[in-house]
Length: 332
Ligand code: UDP
Image 1: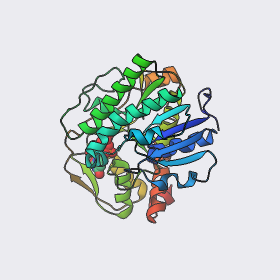
Image 2: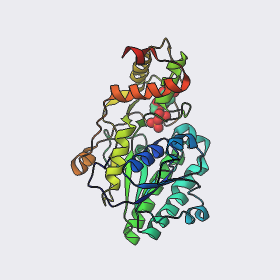
Image 3: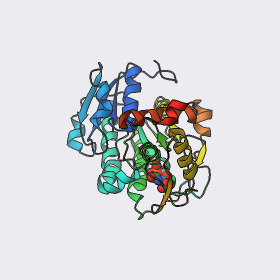
Image 4: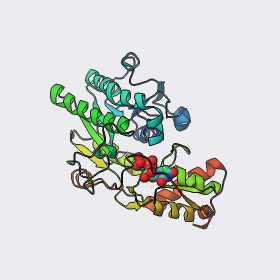
């Protein structure tokens, strides 16, 4: 399989956070494109299980390594042609449980990854986030919006870590001419999310499959725009294959309220779960939808997997793991 963009001449890639949800899909996609992959992960929120099916593949190597530890990073062999810097706890539950590690990986970790890129003359792509827009006052969010982040709120450990990482990448490009870029990823869903990582899609699916109450935060009128993992991966690799320095939004454009999402997942799983309302997290963003004009017009990227297909694959994944068949999966 080749990449969607004119294939860059990559022989070996480093994926930091490669044993996480997105990282593991990236490793797999690169191997499928005949790129050798070093998957570096400290297994704080990632899992060796996510890459177990890749371990025997030629060109794949797992390295247990904390990217925030300069000694460990310096030992990564390389040389790398491309570095995808994805290491970071990414679900609110994870980054709230590991606030200092989250700040460390965005700051020291990004600095170390940039050092490797300089060592090898590699292209580096930083996985940034829609959270740099905070609770946005502009809708949809374009890349030139500066955001509305509470610097001392609970989410700041993630938001400011990623904002600082963006500043670091930009400073390296300006000061050292490093070939580096930034993708701002919006909510992505799909197989290999952790069942209990607290994020909305796996939480609702697992609750619905188990027949447990589906926990909608607040009245559920807050929105998110979801993108299936294969589309996100394609978007990431598309940006990685350019020499673009500008941050690029990658995300789904169909905006859905959390309450609607709960109703849809209950229906699709054929569940008898009821909806229960729980307290809304502090600083939970009200609305979120990317403006993806830049990705579309400059790079020709747009999401392709329809919601009905993506959510079916995701429900099937969790149903096969929990052993709870989804009535909806049979019906479809
Ligand atoms: N959410 C919810 N119930 C849950 C988990 C999440 O209502 O069991 C809400 C959460 O408050 C937020 C949205 O779903 O409004 C998306 O949350 P998630 O943690 O998936 O990602 P975020 O976009 O907030 O990083």
